[in-house]
Image: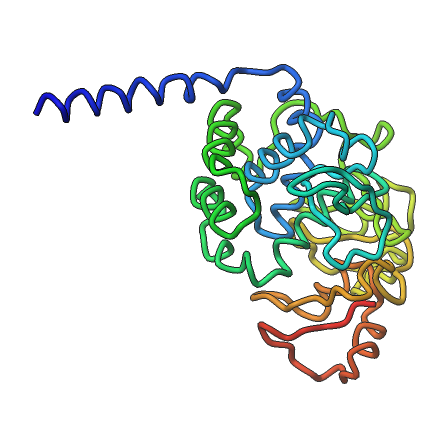
Length: 298
């Protein structure tokens, strides 16, 4: 009994310093204030908890101050793995390893989402609830995202200390440090040599067109939709004519169809004109896609 008690006491004492390591950091808070809206937007599109995205981003990039973040805008430590875009080299598990490099931090966040959603390795995570950040943290570690044995614990500690779980409800509090000019209503994002906004509840092409000085008729045409179509919250609205295909870096990265998607929503997601998405995949407009279909987007 005494031996058992002593062993238990030792285990407790050993755990105290580990628990005490996580302290509030103003740099971490500034990072979350800067990127929280992007994380929420990614969550609405890809169903990855915003809290997980932010915790991974701040941890992997040292709050945006790591060598990879500064040299290559890589906030998630994603290695090349067939990447055809710009690269940077950095010592990690081995010396001089190849890592992906991005034009800006937003592209890093976007690629992180695509990386998780397009890999079979992480498919089990998407069976979890969007609010189950603990399950996601443990699942990422179990799936091999990081080699650090405390990776899941670190993510959970960060999420709890900074209350990042509040963002998993899709709400952003306070003013974000990332913005586009002085426009108060919609944030403008750039992708595929084009610009888009994320529709909010109650939006129409008329209201968005009025905000940006674009004819609502043209806006509907750019988005291949009816002029008076009802926009769903979280829907992409492109502000210019969409492209023929996705960016070059998607050449060898097909899209795997998930539940609830359609050819139209996929075309919107990548900023591709619908007819070219059908054409690239040798499909006719009457084809009904199904979960698991693999589609070329470039």
